[in-house]
Length: 118
Length: 116
Image 1 (cartoon, rainbow over the protein chains, first blue to last red):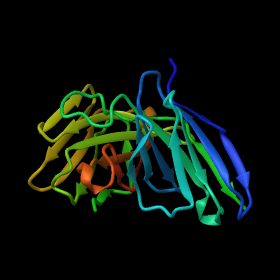
Image 2: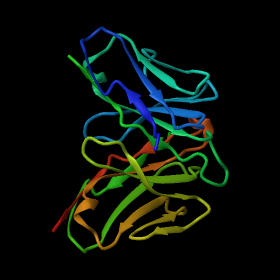
Image 3: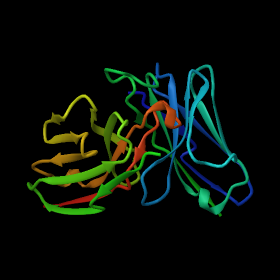
């Protein structure tokens, strides 16, 4: 079963560098969201994209950016890395962005990318 | 903005006992409440969810209840098994004008340990 995939699995960077994380949603899913999960905490919303448009942004600095491609895959970019950016970055996909009824907006998570900033 | 509080942070039960995890949310307009289970080093997996037009939902040993008036929802696991040991997260989805159409606000998590 082709679930949400993310690459790379692990990444080690130094302060000041930039990083690009990638996500492929479940086939047919049009919405991708990004979350940051710091160790011992719940995931925190960063961005949502639907049909290649940004549909939501969390409380993160402008160093964080993202985009969605025509095939619905997505990239998360983080510039000028700080030690505090060390976390598990999770991607979640859903068929639709929001559903009044039914479950087309259920979010399924990928395995995440573990980013360590030294 | 929406805020979700989750209790307890850790929960230890004997195999076969029930476990209850409680969450409260702040935005009365939130309308969707999923629960995710995350095992060590793995992705969060949806185990059950409930929408604001329903008060209770059950799936085998797992049930969720929602009290919109009090703005709280709870996860109930009956007949717990060692494989239920994991971190459980509740989440709430606020309305679109709060910064995202399908944005989830998560609680801090509950570490459940089921002892044989």
